[in-house]
Amino acid sequence: MAQSYKVKRLFKDTDKQYYGKDQLYTNTSQARIDELIDKGFLVAAEEETEAELKHLGGGHYELPNGEKVRGKDKAIAALNDQS
Image (cartoon, rainbow, N blue to C red; front, top):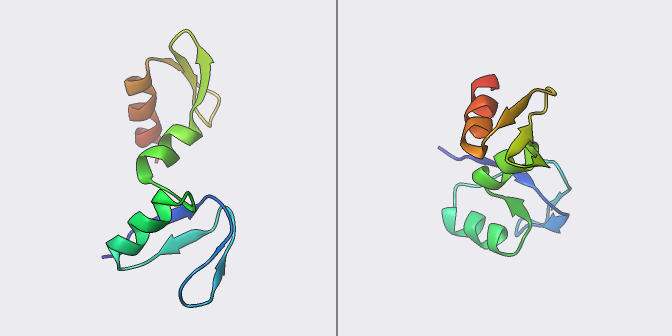
């Protein structure tokens, strides 16, 4: 099963289709996905989760819903619980 990745910046894929920022990209070839992540076109799943968290300093993080949590691991767990 192919997993979707969030597009970080505009690129033209091998099928000549354009993918813009914040669109979802799916491909069955893991090698192609790894190549696009390495080149900075796609956001890996872990990076996407961290991008949704806002670091407030002092080990505190703000979730997309405005809730504040202390500790990165707790913040990621709380973010995953919201999904």
